[in-house]
Image 1 (cartoon, rainbow, N blue to C red):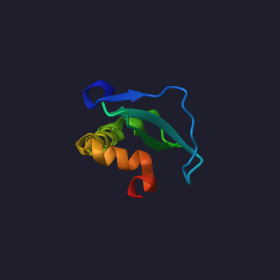
Image 2 (tube, rainbow, N blue to C red; image 1 turned 45 degrees about the vertical axis):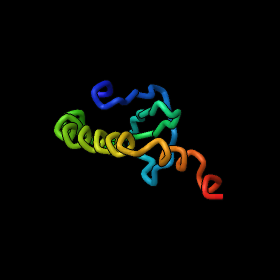
Image 3 (cartoon, one colour; image 1 turned 90 degrees about the horizontal axis):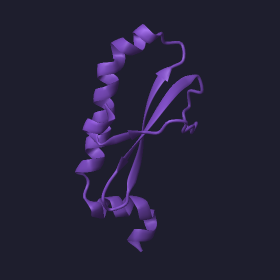
Image 4 (cartoon, rainbow, N blue to C red; image 1 turned 180 degrees about the horizontal axis):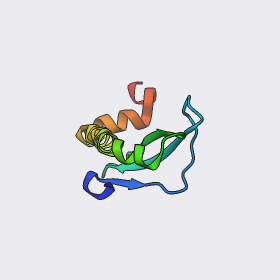
Length: 90
């Protein structure tokens, strides 16, 4: 899944910013030649079975690919504004 969308799985990466602590999270990185990287994730409720996840996988994958497309469709100037935040507006 990662290579065709320009995504790299981040194994062992644990960041808990979710309002749902019982969710399992899988993180991916999308990088641009300008040096900007995006952190993308998929969350699945911890009580879901493997069969539940397999059934939802096409939807989860499409959502992740959509996030990656949005990132890659941005210009490098937009990426710089994201990196610099409000400092770029000064």
